[in-house]
Image 1 (cartoon, rainbow, N blue to C red):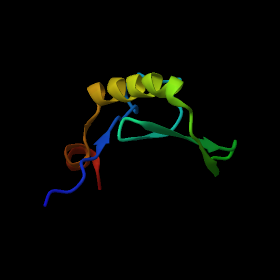
Image 2 (cartoon, rainbow, N blue to C red):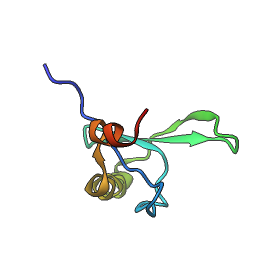
Image 3 (cartoon, rainbow, N blue to C red):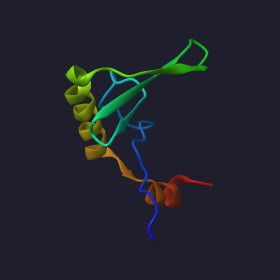
Image 4 (spheres, rainbow, N blue to C red):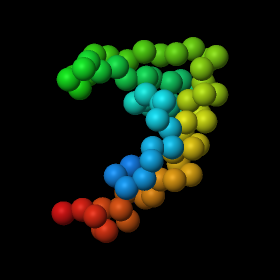
Length: 80
């Protein structure tokens, strides 16, 4: 049984294509969990924007995925 696929959008040497996007999870293209952090990077919890925000977060996801690469390939090149 194959595992879950992971991708990485490495912005080390390129501009972030979604600079206004918060850290978020998109669940089944139906629910968004936007992560909140304090100024020192400590996780404070998540907000769940309503349906009216779903298309914006899906656009963030689509933009990121258009430039992301499979993690395994990225790790083989840059990891260790």
